[in-house]
Length: 315
Ligand code: BDR
Ligand code: CA
Image (cartoon, rainbow, N blue to C red; front, top):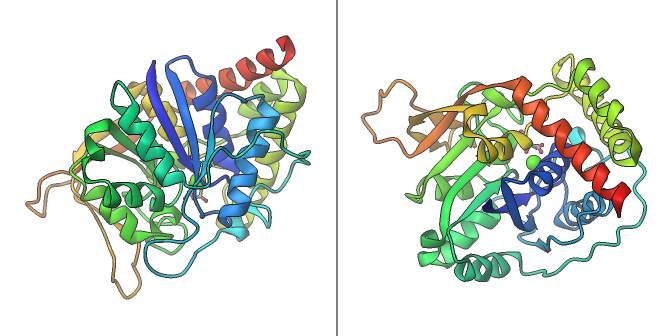
C-alpha cells in the first residue's frame, strides 16, 4: 500500500478522485487537503466533506489549506462546476468534520512523521503544495513523488493555452516543477480521453445505490457543461487519472520532459511549455503523461464506486 495525500478542490472530477483514492487497496489515504480553485476554499472544503459523507469515507482527515494563490487574483471555475462547485446532486448536511484549518501545517507534520516517503497527488491549483515546499525546505525528503492533474502538452481550457489548475496559480506550479522532486504531470492531453460516455454511465448505474446515483448526477451536470463550453460529447473526468497513475503506472504512459510554466506571456500566462522533443537543451524535470488506457482507467473507477457502495451496505 502506498501512503498518499490527496490535495484537491472539489469539483466534480475531484469527487471521483476522492472515491478512487479512498477505495483502492493499493493506496493508504492519509489525508485529503483542500485548496481554493473550482470554488472558494470554504466551498471546496464543504464539498470534500459532502463527498466523504456520501461515500462513507469517515477515517480520512479532511484539512483545509490556502484560500488564495501565491500571487495574483483568485480564479474560480463556477462556469464549469456551478455556484456550489459541485452542482447537480442534492447532498444532505455533511457529518464528516474538518480536522484542521491549517492544511499546510498539517501536511508538514504528517509527512515528517511518516515512516516512509508519501506520494502527493494534487488535482487542484498547486498553492498548498508550493506553500509546503517553500515553508519547509527539508520536506522533500518525505515525498516519494508529486503526481498532478494539470497543464497540457497541447492547448488549454481556461485560456487557449492555459489549463485551469496551472492558470489559477502559475507561480505555485513553477515552484513544484522547479522543486527537483519527482513530478508526474497528467495534463489535458490525456485526461480528455477519460470520457464518461454512455457505456461508462451504464456500468455505474448497474452498481446501484445512492453513491452511484450521485455520481451519475455529477456526470450529468459536468456533461452539460462540457457540451456547452467545449462541445464535448461526454464529460472528461480529469482528476482520478492522476490517482490511477499512482495505483497502476501502466495505465498512464509517461515520457521524461522539461516543463516550464509561463508566468508572464501576453496571452499565455499559466501555459505549460512541454519540451517533448528536447529542443531547449534543458534537463527533464517531470514525467509527462502522453498515453491513457481509458478502459483500464474506467474499470478502476467503476470498481471503486462498487467497493464503497458495498462497504456502505455492509456498515
Ligand atoms: C482541472 O480543472 C478543474 O476544473 C478540474 O477539477 C480539474 O482539476 C481540469 O482542467
Ligand atoms: Ca480539480
